[in-house]
Structures are given as C-alpha cells and as structure tokens.
Amino acid sequence: MATIFIIDDSPTDVRVFSTLLERAGHQVLSVGTAEEGIERVPIEMPDLIIMDVIMPGMNGFQATRTLSRDPVTTKIPIVMITTKSMETDRVWGIRQGARAFITKPVNEKELLACINELLSSPT
Image (tube, rainbow, N blue to C red; front, side):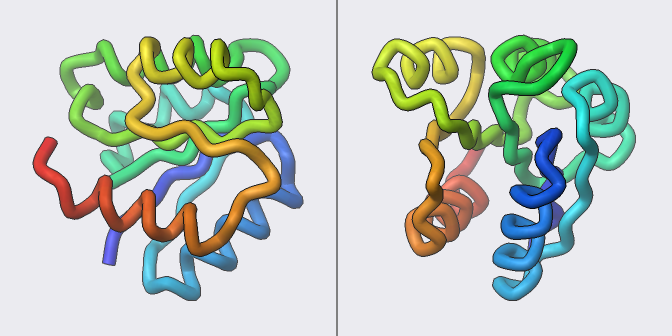
C-alpha cells in the first residue's frame, strides 16, 4: 500500500506501530532520532511520516518544522504521536507542519483511519 516512515526513539513504540501498519499492508521504515529522520526522509521519500515529539537531541517539533519547510519533503504528511496531551502542544505541532496530532496511548483504529485519510487526500 504505502511506505510509512517512523521517527521514534522508543523501540517498543516502533515495534507496536510497525506491526500495526504492516498488518494493514504498509511498508515500514524507521529511525531512532530526529536528525537521522531528517537525513533519510529525502532519500526514502515515504508516503507518510509518524513522528514522536520527545526524543534526545532534536525533538519532533523541530524535525517536523524542518521536513515540512523543505521543498523536497513538504508534501509528505506528518502525524505526530506523543504523550504530550495539552492543547497547546497540539496547536504547536500543527503550526510546525504536522497534518495530525495523536496522543498516546494510541487507539489503533483512530491511527489507521487518520493515516488512510491523509494518504487518500490530495496534498
């Protein structure tokens, strides 16, 4: 179906999301840091990015801003997934270029519905 790139420093979350997405027919790529994601996304050119917020070094807000403002990657939708549940976090994530903001723990049906909607909508 689609290639989805996960940028998350938690091996557990990467495994959970990868299993869910692969079961839904998607190909999954992943890295554990925002810096590595910024480096690899323009090479891999995935259909969608799942971005954690809290990571060592560069955080997900900074990485989302970088990828969403890069002419090469600007059209790739980014879904931020985080434990940060304040409305201000959601607003900030959207302002940085995220197309969706989901808080953990993630509802699998909600995540898949969100991904399917973003993949089917024109950029």
